[in-house]
Image 1 (cartoon, rainbow, N blue to C red):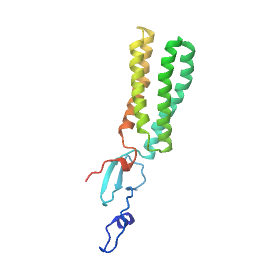
Image 2 (tube, rainbow, N blue to C red; image 1 turned 90 degrees about the horizontal axis):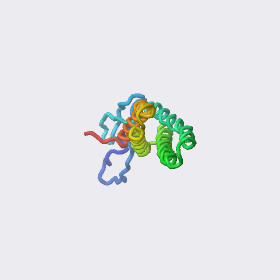
Image 3 (tube, rainbow, N blue to C red; image 1 turned 60 degrees about the vertical axis):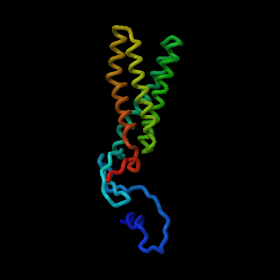
Image 4 (cartoon, helix red, strand yellow; image 1 turned 30 degrees about the horizontal axis):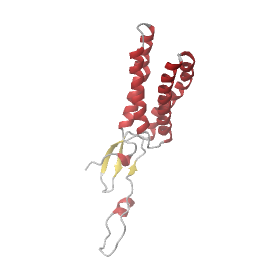
Length: 176
């Protein structure tokens, strides 16, 4: 109620108070994905934003995936011909960087995770397509298909979902 009284118009025309913009205040524990938000006008609305619990699991998954790529980079650099190694190591380094930035921002509760999540989704999708396009029939193609289905495409879908979701309640569109 303090928020409503503070942001309400002045009771008398002679009372001039500068307009103060304050963000909406959360009501409740924030454990549910759909949380109730008290807007400036005092109306309640439903918000589909990331809560603390909704950030932890994806943050751990993406950070773990980014860390798992680090030894893979060494393996690629040591086993592929130099020209191929440069291309694949660069792509996988960009993937690892985007995954680690997204994951750590989610774990810290930082609201600016959407851009690296979008970059990670695009890089993972590119990696899956290139793996499948350049694989020779047989074991190499089977491995590329397994990696695409088991890791790259699910991670890309998770990152795309995170990139499309509002970062915090203030970023969610207001419904009247």
